Image (cartoon, rainbow, N blue to C red; front, side, top):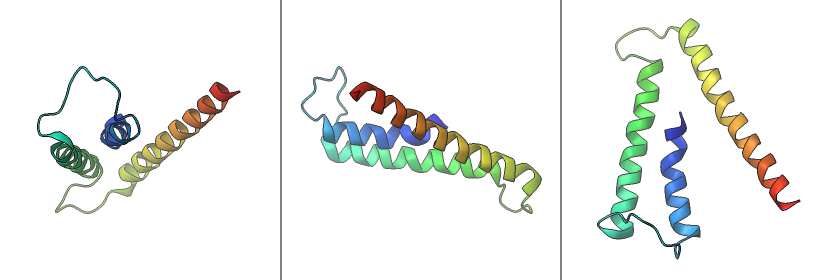
Length: 91
């Protein structure tokens, strides 16, 4: 689940902190970094979808429902914790 936000965070940090010294550089520059991030994000999303739904079989909501609710709640709680943490840092 953390990998869902990893690649968008990578792209955001490359944009907002572009001048920061980094120990590793992606070969190919910004364009290749964007391509890699998008492709990786697609694979992670696909893995999450196929964990919940298997193509060719009927949807089992007794399994998929709690998993989807857990994923959404985890993302929401993570965002809330980050917002609270940011608020306390500035105070």
